[in-house]
Image (cartoon, rainbow, N blue to C red):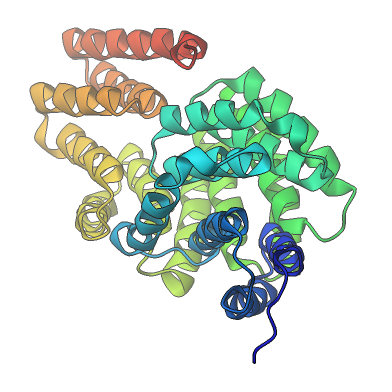
Amino acid sequence: MDQVLSSSQVGVKINEWYRMIRQFSVPDAEILKAEVEQEINQMEEDQDLLLYYSLMCLRHNLMLEYLEPKTMNEERSNNSYLLEKIEGSRSELKGLLEYYFHFFRGMYEFEKYEYLKAITFYKQAEKKLSLVADEIERAEFHYKVAEVYYHMKQTHMSMHHIIQAIESYRAHETYTVREIQCSFVIGLNYLDMEYPEKAIPHFEKALENAKKGDIYRLQGVSLYNIGLSFFVSDDFEKASKYFAQSLAIYEEKYENSNRLLDPLIMLTKTKFKLKDNEATSLCERGLMLSRKLNDEILYSEFRFLKTLYTQDSITELENILKYLEEKMMLPDMEDLATDAAKYYKENEDHKAAGVFYEKVLYAQKQIQRGDCLYEY
C-alpha cells in the first residue's frame, strides 16, 4: 500500500517551489513543480492545499511567460483554465490563500494590459498583506504595485512602493532579477519626471548586472530603457542605436514573442522622426507581427504611426486615440497625441496641431485623476 503523505509535508515543498519562482530559478522551480505534482497524488485530502497548488501553478506560468514569453494566444489558455478552476472555489479562499489569489490575479491582468483591473486586485491583496510575514513576499507585492502605478503614470505612488521593494531585495543576494527590475522602475519614473540624467545610471547598472548573469531578456530591456532616455532628450540618433541593439537581442532569443514589439515600435517611431526611409518597412513589420501575436494595443499604435507619417488621416488618428482611451491606456494616448501634435506643428498645420495638443491635455488630466478611478 502506498504511503499517504501529510498535506503539511507537501505544503513545505510548495513553499520551496515558490521561493525558486521568486528567484526566477527556472530549473529548480520545474523540478520542485514535478515533485509536488507527484506528491499531490499521494497526499491526504486537503482542499486548501490543492487551492494553494493551483495558485502556485498560475504563478509558475507567469514567471515562465516573463522569462520565456510566447504569443499572446499561447500563454493565455492554460492560465485562463487555472483561473476558472480557482474561481470555482473562490468561497473557500481564506487568509493567505485569499491574498495569493488577488495578488496573482493582479499579475495576470497586468500582463493583459488591464492595468485598472490589476490595481483593483492588488488593493484587495493589500487588505491581507498584514498576514504576510515573509520579507521577500512583501517586497514582491510592493514591486508589482510599483510596476502598475508606473504604467498608469502615478509616479509618486510608484516610487513609494519601489523603494520599499528594492531595499528588501538588496539585502538578499539571490534576487538579482528583481533588483534589476526595480532599477528599471526607478529609472522609468525618473524619465516621467523628466530627469533622464538620473535615469540612465540605473539602466546602465541594470545592463551591467544583466550581462554578469547572462540574462538576455533583461539585457534587452536595459538597452531599450537607455534608448528611451535618449529619446525623451530628443537625441534620436543615440536612441535609434540602443533600440536597434535591444531589438537584435529579442530577434535572436525571442523571435516569436510579443516582447519584441516594444523596441520595434520605438525604433519605428525614432526612424520616422529622423525621416529615415527604413521607418516604413519597420512599421509594416510591426503591424504584421503585432497582428500575428494578437497584441491589439500595439497593433493600434503601429497603425497610428503609419497613419500619421504616411496617410495623414486626422479622423483615423482620433479613432485610434479613442480606442486607447477606452482601454485605459492613457499614457500611450498622451504619448501618441504628443507625437501627432509635434508632427503637425513642424509641418505648420497649426489647426491639426491644436486638435492633438487638446488630446494631450485631456489625457494628462485623466492621468492626474487616476487615483480616484481605483477607489470604491
